[in-house]
Image 1 (spheres, rainbow, N blue to C red):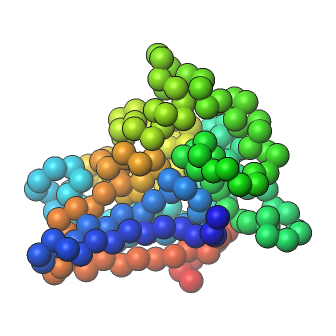
Image 2: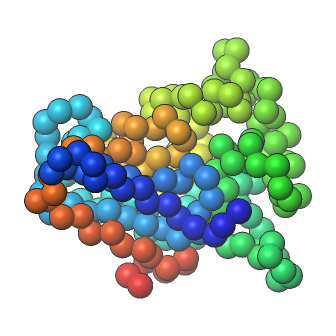
Length: 197
């Protein structure tokens, strides 16, 4: 497991690009995107508000929101010894699928939201399986989504927060068909302070 926040970029679209921020797996640093120009055509995955900063700026605020929503078990605890000293959050996708060493704190989260349970989505949808295939409208109701969205504050004018929390979270996470003439500023914020590095 690497300590990283993840930004994906694809530029194979003949004068257009796709970019997104992912909080699906593990992350320590908050990352934001800001576009110079707006775009209101195409599908919701192409909509952009000019000058709006997508993403949250303070990891401590995100961690506090995870605790408030009852999803604090995803926070990797600080450990002063060895390679386990990560300052990060691990998303549900990785908690369900990662087979390496996990901190004891994850046991409580996995007891609350077990792999084969139905507590997250209800009905007969198993937590781990459905997390991988759920779309934004379902994900927006989960504690993980609420915590990260609350850490950011308000979405853009279209209701978009601008980052993924699960593999199928395209409506919230994708910026597709962005013209190369529309520059995007990527900012990496410190772990616990809302000021640019």
